[in-house]
Length: 341
Image 1 (cartoon, one colour):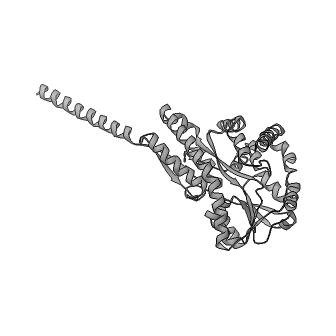
Image 2 (cartoon, rainbow, N blue to C red):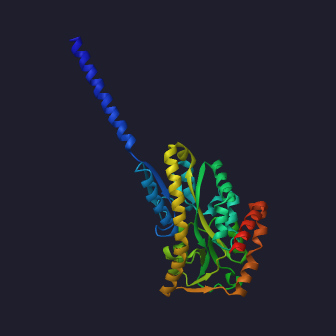
Image 3 (cartoon, rainbow, N blue to C red):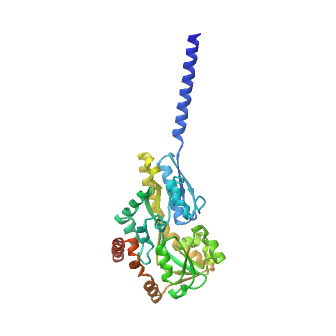
């Protein structure tokens, strides 16, 4: 009887071990899920870059990683997403660079300064060089790893009245992101800045809560803001870009080969997304014009000079907040790009 009991016990333990092994194998085969949340449409430049990253990352990791995309603020809005990332509720974001000022990283507001970059080559000299890397490294103190910079492009102004000279902004309620620089920018134009989440802008424009906004054309088009804005001025007064970021604790927990594959996928997606941003903004402006719903105006030389006279002083005024040395370094890089062009 004792021998039969021993045999039965051995069989029971063997079955348990086999079941445990199968369970471990199944668990090991389950993909690592990366929730990637952003606030724009899936067909905007950032949305397209995110989709390309998903495709490249899942292919490079042979299915060991699955990227779950959440566009158009379906998971988190502007004010919520950074906190969610730090808490680990979402693993990856691509917030606009203006979002890091309220996080305590005021240096990132250098990208908000009007007329800081004459062209995208100037932007890339900064974002793809030592300055950009140093700025991303600062995010680690907040539990964030910066992976890349993504372009959207240069901003235009929109409203339900023509905006040709700074005086035209007088008393207009203009939507801005939460950025001290953008607040001061609108006040320099005698407008009243209104901070609103991106997902709330269209309704605010429709209801008259705000009179106008600034955005690259792709955002105006994909969010259909042009349907509630009668005038667009192609001012190209400022740059709008994003930083692709990931929760540091999560990133550090990934196997090294997974991190390597994701880093390569991000580099390829960045190159693709930045090229698409240029194409999409040109196409968006043409598409808006074709609708006939919005008048598009290009500043002449005299008007452009008036805008610059009103806004260029911000680069000096905000030096105490952003850092004079940083502003000077970015100016130097921008000047090099302008000369090369």
